[in-house]
Image (cartoon, rainbow, N blue to C red; front, side, top):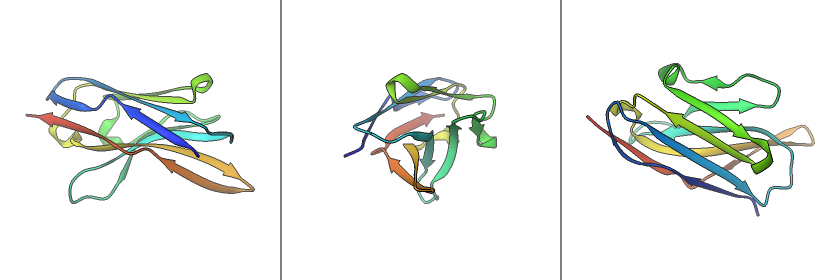
Length: 119
């Protein structure tokens, strides 16, 4: 069974930095995309950043210039470097892996890691 293991969340002051990590274990499919989503209280889950094979990284407008996503194919890992954090970045961050089988996309999700930015 596919397992996504996240780490790196925590409490940080505004202006600070955090680095999130996610490793996809026991995945036997070709990974098409890896990324991060977040969900704040009372809001819908939204894309933060993702990286798709053969494409440039994609970022939400709200994090452009502050967050950087990277992927290590050999480790089936994805990282999110977050700098100049703001209070509005407070949310549960979820790792996402997308695979394609038979022309259909299947998504796998991590358990979520809390990021809290204090002002």
